[in-house]
Length: 246
Ligand SMILES: [Fe+2]
Image 1 (cartoon, protein in one colour):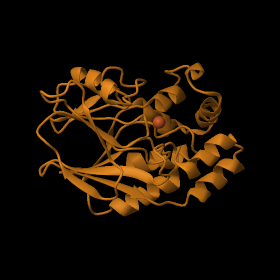
Image 2 (spheres, protein in one colour):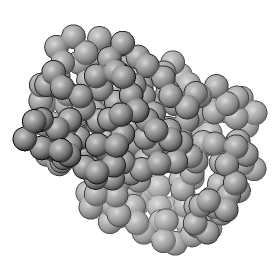
Image 3 (cartoon, rainbow, N blue to C red):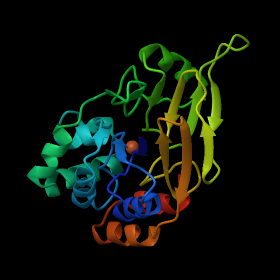
């Protein structure tokens, strides 16, 4: 079975459409790692697409904030403003989609899915080898898939020569790699708001039988998303960061 793994779509419809078009025919099912809403101008449209994919998925911090499960005080002023708007425009059916998401799940026996970290799935960031080494103690499957940082990366469990996880950046296009038989933490990067300096949408495809991971970056019409954000008077820093991938 081949899985399309999407994280941090952040209501960026044009990025999501570009990813789905790019991945077409190369996956069987979809896994979603949280934050379909927040920051972006098309929350209803993005949830409708995700729901139509019948994906398995987990909740992100922005998803929870829209549901009122997290205080908006936890977010910066720009993020908070868009979350208030998102709450106001999201239709009840799509609210129920967010409510249906769990904090963590196990799929295909070997994969734990969370948004932030396996220790604190909604909020904690796994940003570096130290975080990843701590995170290793909090899942029992071989692999853990997570998002939240918006940076594509793999952390590999340490061997006898090292005490910390190895950090393996995912920066090349279409880089296919075999999954080794050791624990990994895998972050596919963000579809809708990349923060690794590359503004293109980021995603991975996992082939569970062949144990192959492929990472992709996809161009999308960033200016169309930005125009929609400006038309809604969204905070300018959120608009311009999409061009920078920061
Ligand atoms: Fe996010």
